[in-house]
Amino acid sequence: MSTKSFYQDRRIRKSKAALKESLIAIMKEKDFKEISITDIVQTADLNRGTFYKHYQYKEELLEEAIDDVIKDLIDSYREPYQGVEVLIINKLSSSTIKIFDHVEKYSNFYSLLVKSNVLFELQKRICDELKKLVLQDITNQPLQHNINANLIASYQANAIWGMISEWIQSEFIYSAAYMAEQLLAILHLNSAKNTYRET
Image (cartoon, rainbow, N blue to C red):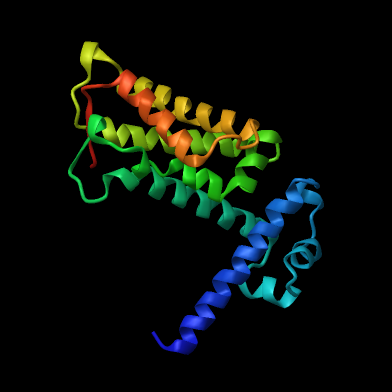
């Protein structure tokens, strides 16, 4: 990659990030349907031409912002699996749990998600993504007492989402590291002998 294209790519990423942050910030104050392209670019301190270089409609911008969050959520959830075939809960350290770092990184987005009904449907999508990730964890594991895999995955996904929601409602009173420590303590309490294999 040439130096010129590197700087162009970086400028594009920076412009897109500014537009997304602008949209989320405005959505705290206005209904999405009332937000104009002018609102978005003025808040981002960019011009309309920059917007139209990347998007036709504000809906595309919102969809890409949501996709970015979901992708980063998945990457963050999978972080403890990096370089290991089998994840042993008892040997997991809180520093490898990155899901709360992810929520902190996208704190404006998650605050909007939890504190308003603007993106209400997205809460279900995030819980569904978490459930899929948990199901991948337990796919190859024998479950004790004929436990239904879908139900336990739903239970764990909603438990994680419950912790995230509580943290957001508290205005992020705790650090991401503290939240990771608490999740790990709960995992140790609930599944001292369980191991999960990445598929």
